[in-house]
Length: 235
Ligand code: GTP
Image 1 (cartoon, rainbow, N blue to C red):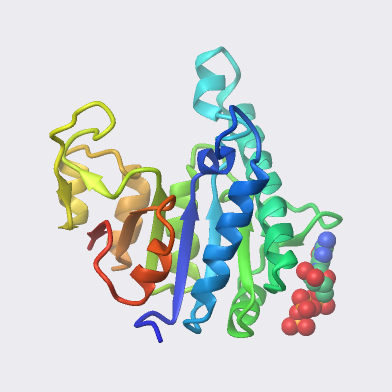
Image 2: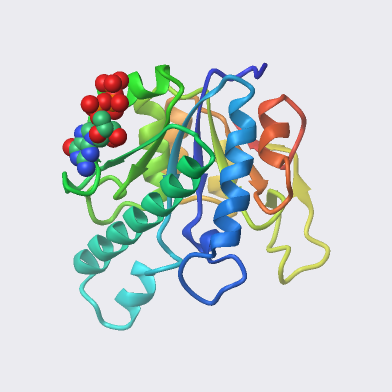
């Protein structure tokens, strides 16, 4: 059993690249689907939000002269590609999954309808919320915080490629230290750049704890849900 009933898992699109330069690595997708399948043994309900950075980076496109709104919509479409790929991988493991998109495209997936998403969750289906919030200027981290509040998730699990929240970048500073517990306000004030301030303040206002952990370590997700201390808790 888990102390959580319902969680929102936030996956970075970048992670989907796996060992590739670009796109979706089927091996990583398989690993991820198995990690998720394993967690469902804990009888939790799981919503998922995925980024799109493995396919398209809005910020980089804007820097190269693309209109911000157009870049953001393109990024939202990239998240839908990732959602479909993850649904496919989960379905191969017989994990019942539904994709809902914030930008309506009925031929491709269900539109985002909160009450329907909640019914799916109650039936223990994984629900992937794709297409961001459907609005430009919002990140997929903010989408995760918004959907977590809407589905009344008990926690946000933010998967990253490092072990949690550090006082400086562990990839450039070898003496960076890991926080095991930190407040939302400290993350904002210290500019720790784990999530944008909109996502952090939305989570703070709704008192949803955020667990930041390394997705590449097998069983991390399962261990957090089992109540073990893994990575950093922002609360
Ligand atoms: P229940 O109402 O609990 O039975 O949920 P369900 O999702 O199994 O039933 P529903 O009849 O809503 O959907 C059946 C299948 O069609 C599921 O795989 C849905 O994801 C899919 N589906 C439902 N609505 C849409 C839609 O608007 N577009 C697309 N592409 N698929 C849809």
